[in-house]
Amino acid sequence: MHLKYGDELIIGADYTEVEPPYNPAEFNFKNWLANQNIYEQAFINQKSVYKTNRSGGNPILKLALNLREKQIAKYRRLIKNDEAFAVASTLILGYRADLSKEILTAYSKTGTIHALSVSGAHVGIIYLVLNFLLVFLNRKRSLQLLKFVIICTLVWGYALITGLSPSVVRAAIMITIFMVATTFSKNKNGYNILAFSAFCQLLYNPFLIWNVGFQLSYIAVFGLIYLQPIIYKSIYIKNKWLDKLWNFIALSLAAQIVTFPLSIYYFHQFPVYFLLGNLFIMIPLVFMMYLGIAVLIPIFEFLSPIFEWIISCTNDVLRWISNLPASTFSSIWLTMPQFILLSLALGFIIFALERRQKKMLFIAGGLFMIYQILVVQESINLSQQKKIIFYSLRKNYAVAFISGNKAIIETNLNPKENAYLFFIKPSLEQAQIKEIKILNLKKDTISPVFTKKDNQILFYNHSFLIVDETFNYKTLNAIGKFSSLWITGNTKFDLTKINTELKYNEIVVDATNKDYKIKLFKTFAENNHKNLHVLKKNPSYLIDLNP
Image 1 (cartoon, helix red, strand yellow):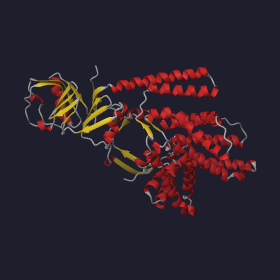
Image 2: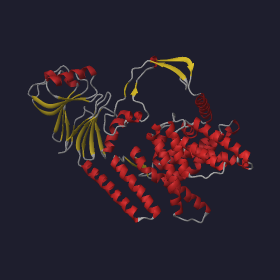
Image 3: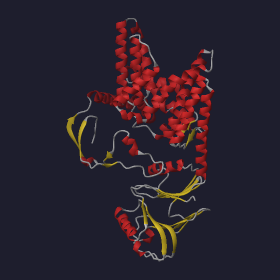
Image 4: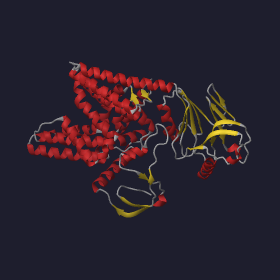
C-alpha cells in the first residue's frame, strides 16, 4: 500500500498502554512518547488498514512534501553513489531515510553531526546567499521591503520543505526578526530575538521543551551569542586570515562548551577531535549547500558530479578522523545529580572568567569537586560490584554475570543483533564493563568465579539449575540445594516431577517459554509457595551479591 501525506485511513486497532523500559539503562520509549503527549499504541498489519479515496491534511505542507519528493527523485537521478545521495538528501532536504549507520557514526564521532542535520547553520547559509544576491535592492526603502518579503518567503519555504525541525524554525524566526529590525531601522538584541523565537515555538507546542534538538539548538545559540565573543577577544591576531580562522575556532569552542554536559547526558559520548572535524567541514559544508541547491535548478544539473565528489571526499575524510586513536570518549553515563553539578560548575566558571570574580571561581571549583567525588565514588562501587542480571527480552534469553568490570553473558543473541544492542549493551556500558565474554548455554566453561557445567551454574555463592529442553518428559530425581531454578528453552518438563529432596528458593522463567507454559509455571509456584520471576513483559531481575 503506497501512502502519502494527506491520505485518509480507516484503521482497526486495539490500543494498549505503551510499555515502560524493562532493562537497566534501556531507552525509555514510554517517557519519550509521553513528552509528545502520546500514551497508547497499537500494532497493526496492512489488512487492518483501509485507504479511502479522500485526502486531507494541510495543503501548504502537502505541497512542500510533494516538492521535496520531486527534489529527492532528482538527486537520485543525478547522484550515482548511494552514500553521497543519502548525505545530499539529508543535508539539503532533511530526508534521513536512506542514511547509513556507518555515515551517522562517522559524523557523530567527529562532532560534525550538526552539519548532517538540517539546522540553523543551513538556514543561515541560505540567508547569506539570498542577502548577497539581492544586495542591489538596498537602494530604496520600497525595494528593501521587497527584499524582506522575498528572503522571508524563501527561508520559510525551505524550512517547510525540510520538515520544520525546532532548530530550523528557531533560525527562521530569528532571521525574520533580524530582517524586520534591519528593514525598519530598529534596535537588534540577540538575547531578545532568541527568547522570542523560543516563546513562539513553545506557544505553538509546549511539549517541545522536552525535545533534545530544541534544547541543544537554543543552548548552542546562547553559547554563540554570549561565549563566542569572550573566547574570540581573549586572543588578538593581526593576520586577516588567521583572525578569520580563530573566529571560527571560537564559534566551535563556544557551541561545544555550552552543549557538552547535555550531549554527554543524552548520548553518552564526547568527540575528541570535534575541533579538527569542524575546521575541516567548514568549507565543504558551504560548497555542498551551494551546489546542492544549484543542481536542483535544471540549467545547473551539470554540476552534480562535482557535488557528488565533494560529498564523497568529505565522507572519506570524516571517516578517517573518526578512526583515529581515541577519537571518542564513549560509555559516559551521568546521573541527574552529576549532570546538574557539572552544568552549574561550567556556568560558574564561564561567569567567573568573564567577570573576573574569584568568588564565583571558588564556587565553580567546589561544585566540580563534589561532581568528581560522586564520579569517583560511583567508579569504586562499580569496580567492586557482584551481581546477576536476567534481562527481559521478547523471545530470547540473556543473563549477565558481573564481577567488577568483567561480565560473562549467557545468551542466544548475536552481539550485532538489535535486541542485544538495545536491551543489553546499554546496561553493560552503564556498569562500566570493560571485558565481556559471551557464551551459550550449550557450552560449558570454568573460570575463577563462574562455572557452567552440564545444567548447573555457580557464580560466587549463587547456584542455578537450568531446566531446558533436555529435561523434556523426564523425571528429575537429583538431590541437592540450588539458589534458583532457571527455566528456559520452552521446556516440556513438568515441575511437579521434581524430587522433593531437591531444594531451591525461587524460579526464574525467561522469554523463550510460551505463554501457556508460563501460566503453568505460575500455577505451580503459587501452589508450592515459591518466588517466581517471569522475564516476559516484566522488569529484568537483578540479583545483588554484594554484602
